[in-house]
Image: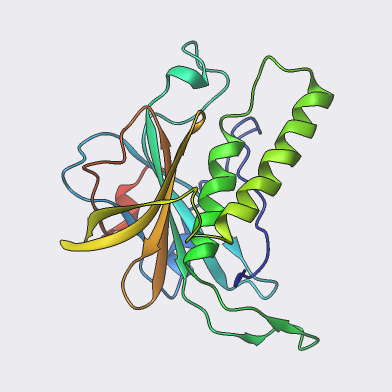
Length: 213
């Protein structure tokens, strides 16, 4: 897969994601979120950076924040997370010792797939078995992201900045994942649960400070 490497899934069970806005403001690419048709809560998650601090990707949340501390539990929460991945060519690593692969739609699919797993793992499962489950499902998500033309994916057309855009889309018992192109500088991934992907639209976030952080 053309990717900068497996990013760490964002674990919703952790003490809390880094909601600092500085990383978002440092990015040299535009951030995407749901378009103005969505009127619910919007919030920042975290950004991913290269070894030299360059921002490579990040996520914005919409709806209810996934939390295992919620009285309703993760099975009843409604959210959509939009992942923006910078479109990067093959390039030298920051320390000059190697080469980083190009990013692609598969990169966005992987980040979305791993993000979904991080907030939907089975809370009632024994801890050791839970880790085995997460490792297994993460490996499957990686393989699926590397085969976007495979039978696990279907095509879904959604607007991006008002332009009908084709995405690769798949559903599972844990939620849904999609990935496609944004503008010329980014790839878009998204995942969600309790909110249908059909009818969603994406647009450039004009002011990232309007998202809660």
